[in-house]
Length: 216
Image (cartoon, rainbow, N blue to C red; front, top):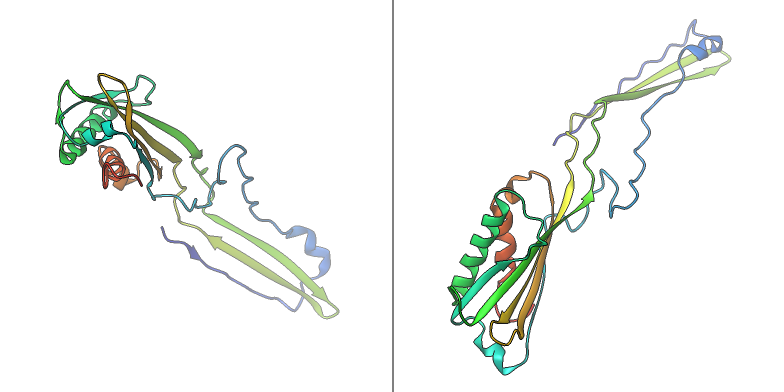
């Protein structure tokens, strides 16, 4: 985005009198009030935007030695907020990461359960008038002066900021013992190219399984 500002000033010191001041009252655009319930008000960049946050934990038991070996079943939780292509995108991303970790997809020793959620962190910005400005008059014993200010903003309103989170856990299929769990979250603008389509699933699962099974 680019922002262009131009300021034009003119002064008249002759026949303009204070009696005409009522014809040029100051005006401007008030900033939008913060939206209650959100981490950051519209227009303010959240410092976490675009940065993946990861936390993982591994069990300290003999059964945890089986992590990264044998067959594993991928099971998406029915509470996941997955729409359209997301179901297949996340399942494919999990399958890729588990294969790299040493697993073979299929019924057997372990199962990975995961849930994906979306949360609105910041609403989209409202459309705004690209031109704003103000005017003011100053007067004295020899006359008065007129000042004009004009601001041009060609930037586009920001889209909604959404938090997408994966939470996953790996269990022993026979005993249901928890062997590993983790979560990865990122805040990204709705429709942002580097997080669009299957890229969100690939990047989040890639971060989640980085260094697997060692905890982060």
